[in-house]
Every structure is written in C-alpha cells, then in structure tokens.
Amino acid sequence: MTAKNEAGQAPDLLYSEAEEDLRAAVRSLLADRADAPSVIARTESGTPYDPQLWKALATGIGAAGLLVPEELGGQGATHREAAVVLEEVGRSVAPAPFLTSSVVATETLLALGAQDGPAAELLAGLVEGRQVAVLAAPFAAASTGAEASVVDGSLDGTLGPVADAAVADVLLVPTADGLFAVPTDAPGVRVEPLVALDLTRPLATVTLDGAVGTRLADTGEGRRAVDRGLLAGAGLLASEQLGLAEWCLTETVRHTRERHQFNRPIGSFQALKHRMAQLWLEVVSARAAARNAADALATGSPDTPLAVAVAQAYCSKVAVHAAEECVQLHGGIGMTWEHPAHLYLKRAKADATAYGSAGRHRDTVAALMELPAP
Image (tube, rainbow, N blue to C red; front, side):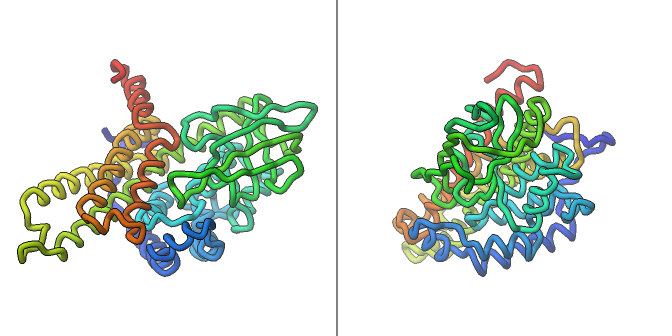
C-alpha cells in the first residue's frame, strides 16, 4: 500500500544524497557518544540521558529544527530527513528526546501556525536546543486519553505515562479548555519517574495541582494540533523501528558468521539461514512501509493516515521479531545484561504500544479502506 502525494504521484522511497549525508553525520555522532557500552552504563546509572549528546544532535547537527521552516529559524527540511535521524536513533537505541520533542511537540506547535506569540517563542527554544518539550499524553496510546482540568485558571490532574517528561522543560498539556504550555519547574507540577520496560526512554507520571500554564490554543485548534503531532509521531516511529530491526539483523548475521560449531559457522546451518532470510524479507518490507509513511507526511498526501497506520501495524511486529531473533540466535551471550540485545528487545516492545498498538492501527486501516475489522 503506497500513498500518493498531492500531485497524485507515487512516493519516492529512495534516499536522497542529502539524506545519506545526514545519516552519515548522525551515525558518526551516535557511534562516538552512544555506543552500546555507554548506553548500557547510563541506563545502569539511572540517568540514561546525556545532555552533551542531545546538544550535539539538536544544535550541532541541527536535528531539533529539521521540521521547522527556515523563516521560523529551523532547517526547513521534511519528515523524510527526520525519519533518517530516527532510523539512526533506533539503530543505536540512543536515549535522546528527538521523537517526543523534535517531532511530536514540534509538529503540534507548527500546527498552531506559530508565527508569533507564546507558541512561536517555545518553538524557537526547541529549535535552538535551549528547551525540550513533550506532549503530556500517554505514550502508549493514540489519543490524549486522560486530560487535565482547568479550574479558576489553574490546571489539575494526573497524566501519564509520559515519555521523556523527566528531561522536559515544558509540557504541552491538552485540556477540554484548550492546549496549555506548562514549565516543569512551575509550582504545582510534579514529575514522578516510573519503572519502565525500556530504560532508554524513561516514563513518568505528571501531576498538576494548581499549576499555571500559558494557553496556546482553544479546544478545537488544540485538539487538531495534538492529533497532527501524534500522527507525525506514529508515522516516524516506524522509522525508529526500522533502524532497530536493521541493527538486529546486521548484528545477528555478523555473530552467526563468527560463531563456530563443529568447525563451521553457525550461520551456514540451513535452519538459521532460513530464519535470517525470512527476517531480511520482513526488514525490506518494513523499510518500504516506513519510507512511504515518511514521504506521505512530507508531501501532505491525503492518504497520510492510511500510510501511517499501515507502517505502524507492520513495523511494530517486525521490530519485535528482529529483536527476539537477535537475542535467541546469539545464544547464551544474548541473554546477558552486558550484551546490548536486551536494550533493543525492550525498545521494540515499548515502541509496539506507543502511539497506538498494531491492532489499533489495523482497525484504522480497516475503517479507512471500508473493510471488516480484523
């Protein structure tokens, strides 16, 4: 299933030279600052985020402003370039708030037409890397779920689990009275870390008790902006899942070439060949689905909701399968904490429920295509 853009043309799923150059820069940075031993060590320390890594990615490479037009201080790129960054983030399971801040929160603010006012000021802070913003909505849901209430101009309620809230400077809080920006250090705001499956993307519960925020939009506009942010997040999450699956496949092939039994590489055994060949076919198909979703978002295709739903329904399964095969085909070492395979399996499992489960996206495909739901 491929979406057509506004001109009715089929999407270009190939990577441009500029996208490959961006990939090379991001991969080099992550290899230097977010290699497997470093990520494991930081997750064990309980503080997975490396502020210097985020500064280098956000401002050094300019990833934080990829989706922001040049007239607003950004890079003026598209979702295709953001997808390339997320592929590399998935490949290294780097603890960086790129998806939550530079995609979901940024896309939400852009949907408000942030030319001036509080939304524009916040967007400028995100582009310059001075601030990190996250949408205060459940990470494992495709809708805003529980909302805060507004009483006498102040916000109350408990929201969560919210991804990357622990490193956020500003929360975008949806309410029945509109969308509000609330600093995390404001009185009445409490961010409580949760024990998450994926230690590289921590979750937290956000409690608002008489917190005061800045209103960014009314109810209708705020809801549309949040929906746009979540759609972009789900669509580009497929690229993160693709990068994760590609790493798992590459690492598994490398290991089975080097690991010998009976004086033969275990990768030469027919049963393992078949498993890796099947996984390769799945990864290639996932690449097509993820690229289609990114291109649909970039071109404003009318089929974007369908492309995103297809990508998520498929890529979630592939990422989990690739991570499971990586653990199993590594044998005993794949079960150890020292090997990074467990980080990829946990990220894959957590991503599979982020911004809607595969089942929920299949229901969306059925509804859009007017087919009986599975």
